[in-house]
Length: 248
Image 1 (cartoon, rainbow, N blue to C red):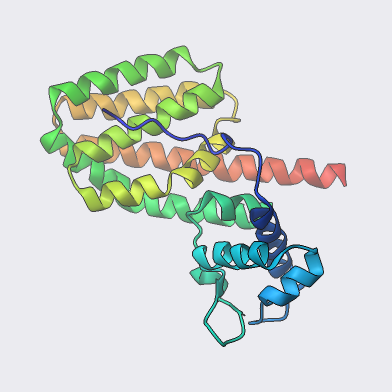
Image 2 (tube, one colour; image 1 turned 45 degrees about the horizontal axis):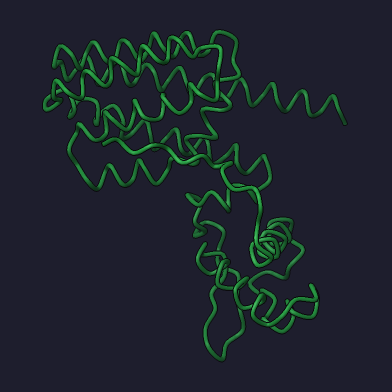
């Protein structure tokens, strides 16, 4: 059975260690914590008025996101930002909008490298069962063009169906691990006027190339779709920045 995409908004309540970790991460990003040095367990307990257990869990969360290194008997240190786990939905939630915009551009670069080739691979091995699911998903997209949030989930599943049809478990895991950023990117591009109608037409082109088992056509259709998405992403982000500037 195809996996259903988890909603990044499914859980709103955050535990105390997660809240403290979020606060510290934002301070690190703003440059309010000395370069290379993170608060110790004791310092976290004292500053936030939390138990040592909460402070310890906070550091574990930061370490799990590759934000800090925690070693027995050594000072807690902040890792280089290039090494943080940017595929984590928690970290995305804590980052400033301009950093998320940068990550969405980098996500597009990754997708432009992988997805056209995945489409070409899928064209050589796609099953009738998968083609039927893709056709059903296009029908659902057409019916959901007035509902961007519902459309987003079907869009994601369409692309994952193609990834699975390529029959490469490593590439499947790479694509799946980037689903949170993919959700954030689709939320931006879905705001464009007539954006979902255009997306449905582009998905239909991809499907028709797969139906014909035409690897070159599938590669080209996916490339056009991603290029259009990138142009829309840049345009919508620019509009957002202008609206934010007017409000200030």
